[in-house]
Amino acid sequence: MLVTVYITTFNRVNLLKRSLDSVFKQTYKNIEIIIVDDCSTDGTQEFIKEISQQDKRIKFFLKEKNGGACESRNIAIQNARGEYITGLDDDDYFLSNRIENFVNNLSNAKNSMQNS
Image (cartoon, rainbow, N blue to C red; front, side):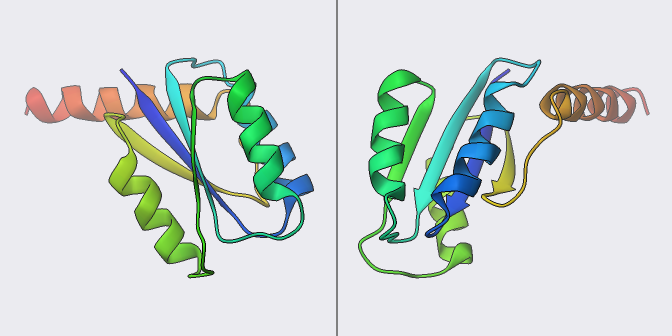
């Protein structure tokens, strides 16, 4: 099952690199990555364009006007294709088994509900 991981960012390219690296290191591999940039001016947009050429799982949206994190999250969610969606802020990172645990726990919860 496809899991969408979205990352919102604004003028923190070095933190974005760290958070994105944590997504690349996931033990669960069936993911799409959506990055929404909130009109950065620090090289973030150039980095996003470059990294998306290296990994086809990445989709990105470059906003022309700063609108805040909530607006950016909504853009990501509206464009997500995954059965499940999870978010990551640019200043955070995932442990390597985060998405695998997420999927397993959701699958277990779904099975429990069906058996009730």
